[in-house]
Image (tube, rainbow, N blue to C red; front, top):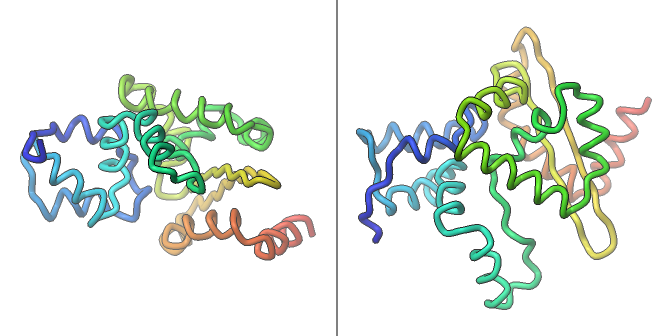
Length: 203
């Protein structure tokens, strides 16, 4: 099983350029694959290299619903349901061509709507490469545009966060890329940081 061959083209369906800190590209370079990798190689791509594409390939292979059922059966009740990683990067492009409209739609989405959207985008990534490519262009997978969205729910509250950072001259893209994911996660879990953001953006 772990020696089973996987076509790299099947893994690439879940790859979005310049969105994982170079992890996926580095995995490919280090291993110098031709057209295939083994399942063990893909697992190493997920665990050792932090490739989002490898992770989502395995999520799809193992079946998302089955993974979440297994977690419930194992008694992991404090763990949120697993979701694919890469679809959220295309969320803003998928819900709207206009960013203000996208923000309104994303800020009001329920948990079930969010899951449904992620699954829709996940299926597009697997089965419709032209549509995926179009979403990448609109979604900002370019040198000078960063977009991100995150939904988080607890027993007492829920928040949805959307960020659109435009750097037309690409003067700040490198350092923004280095801190972008941490910025989103901190905004989601740190209430003090979130309040400082709200104050800074509403002055």
